[in-house]
Image (cartoon, rainbow, N blue to C red; front, side, top):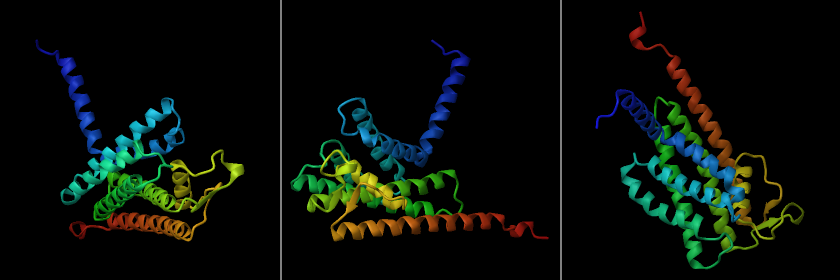
Length: 241
């Protein structure tokens, strides 16, 4: 049975739109990462938010793998590290101790570091940045925040009292995964994270490093954009009289 021309036109439009959306890998990744931050506070609940969060985290990690498919040399390493990263977010509770949860958290941290390196190299090697490149730079910023939250989680696993929760500002005695995300992005953006304080020297040192990286990254990004704008504003040699 033949498909009417009107239906074929609609299918063609939907297919073309889907392909364009799939090619915008960094746009998709950015909004999934942003969405996971919004849903993060409901991660430990047993209701609808719990399942939405797990879906967002799994999708964000898979999109991260897809976003770095242009780097064939490191793609296998990213895939290998993505599996424990997904398991760490879904199966491992923030307060679980032992060697296996610690290894899983370390591999999750390694996943973020490798992905950040790949996307950073891809974004800043582009001489003519476009919208997709800009969203790639924004993804790096968010991934840095998640990477440091994983690092803080590893530190907390090794030193349970490395972070202090203010009793008047928290309903739970020990920091959970979202506390570290909150602390990480508060440190990265220089907004601060009232209610949680780095106590151990290694935690304080790492938070200072994250703050410095956040400032330097924004400075480098702005400089890169200004350089790109100036280069585009220069008249080409073919236009010279």
